[in-house]
Amino acid sequence: MVSEDLSSKNICVIGAGPSGLASARELRKEGHSVLVLEQNHEIGGQWLYQSKVEDEDSMGKKTPLKIHSSVYNSLRLASPREIMGFTDFPFIVKKGRDMRRFPSHNELFLYLQDFCSRFELREMIRFNTRVEYVGIVDSSEFDIGKRIRWAVRSKEIETGIINEEIFDAVVVANGHYSMPRLPVIKGMDVWRRRQLHSHVYRVPQPFSNEIVVVVGNSMSGQDISMELVNVAKEVHLSVKSLEISEGLSKVIAKYQNLHLQPQIDTLYEDGRVLFVDGTFITADTIIYCTGYSYSLPFLDTKGIVIVDDDKVGPLYEHTFPPSLAPSLSFVGIPKKIIGFPFFESQAKWIAQVLSGKRTLPSWEEMMKAVKEYYHSRDLAGIPKHNAHDIANFEYCDKYGDRCAFPHLEEWRKELCLSSLLNAEVNLETYRDSWDDDLQLLQEAHQSPHFTQQGYESIVI
Image (cartoon, rainbow, N blue to C red; front, side, top):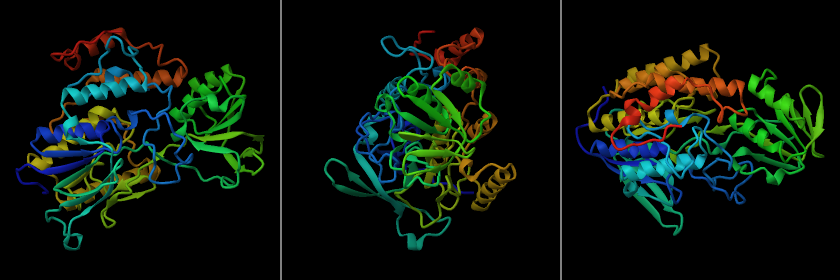
């Protein structure tokens, strides 16, 4: 088995977003010395809204990116606040703030600030510091099973000062909603009108009276399309499949200037957009709402950990690379989960393994588990770039069993599913009109999660 001796470690956490904050707290609980490196001036990660995007490459092709957050001004949470909080710090309603069940992005940012203050995490964070290199110390002598230490080189953004430090372990928590993932479309490089990825979309006004093509009907694609119909001349939503949800069908039927289109076949220099069904339009702007890629430009593991079509690996349980465990770990890689509690369980497991309270399976066992997982996904026909999509409450519960982390409450699971189903049917209104069983909401607010000493929430 892979284990650490019972001692305090000197640990670097990369990123002060939700996963990084959770990691810092759990590591300190276990007695470790923790330094969090954060490139921005404040905590929050993706939830630290950045309104000025003029200096960012519109397609995200110039790296390093200058803007981390991809949050647009009107964004509201897609899940109700009841399910989102860390297990011992509920996301309660506060007077004078956004009291809606599905609040704005800023309300979640304020929640993270509250979390940071409550657990005195700020003292561990070095702000305005970009990590430029993470590598194995004496990599020429590296061997599986031997103790590994990590060299971390960072740059103070305001002064340009370079710092080089050595750590016993590194926890990567840099998020995965910043680096644009772009489709390959014939003619993209010659289409001379405006093209941008949703990473730099903030408000609809710049697109007034334009003909806009939105590529992708993910959450952002749908949100942005519904916002643009109020200012644009026409909005054409280009999708992989014309079999769409009842909720999106209602929205398209409601707005005469919102049109559903198949995938794009070719873009032409004169502004024409040809779709695969042979129809075409002439557009002013194309907005790619096509998702994001995992990006680890600072990490040098000599090829042990790679990103292959958005599969980060090999990772045991999406967390530990077997050959480098437990000195290198990742928090926040999985998608399609109830994020904050899962990040918390990851952080707790990592912290306890590093302190020696828990042990990992042998390298052989971990590699076998990784290969079996990849094989099962291949058999199910799941694309490689969806390798970290979980969408399974049972998996989250079993994951938590590794460190005695509590299972997700049934009310949390039911409220999650209820909001997803409501969005499928009532896309435009689900955040403000819901049919959740009042008894279920009452159960949530009367649960230990919300009745913990010191927390008072206003029931809405």
